[in-house]
Every structure is written in structure tokens, then in C-alpha cells.
Image 1: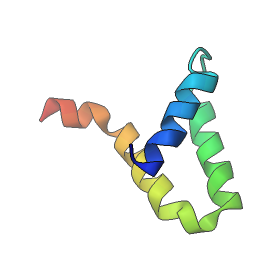
Image 2: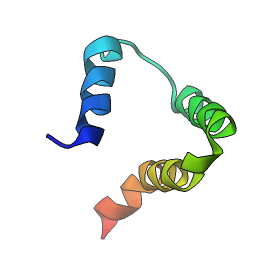
Image 3: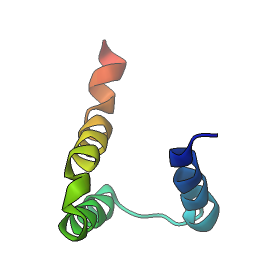
Length: 59
């Protein structure tokens, strides 16, 4: 297991039953980057990838 998997697994375990909007997720990402600017590139890559998932399916 990679270190990054633990966070994703914890998120699924602790909050996996919740329903949230993607707008809420985007706001939390922005909030996280404001508090942790050193992660801006990683968060930007993740959010861009999520935003473009349909584009990847079309290829």
C-alpha cells in the first residue's frame, strides 16, 4: 500500500456514506490549498483530472 492510499481509504471509510456536491469538494480543495499552499500543484492536478474524466472516456 502506498502512503497516499491510506488517506483515500480513510476518506472512504469515514465519509463514504455521505452525499456531497462537487461544488462542496471544490470548495474544500480551495480551502485546503489556502491553508497549505505547498500542495497547490497536486490539488490542481487532481481537480483538473476529476473535471476532465468525461473527456478521457471519449478518447
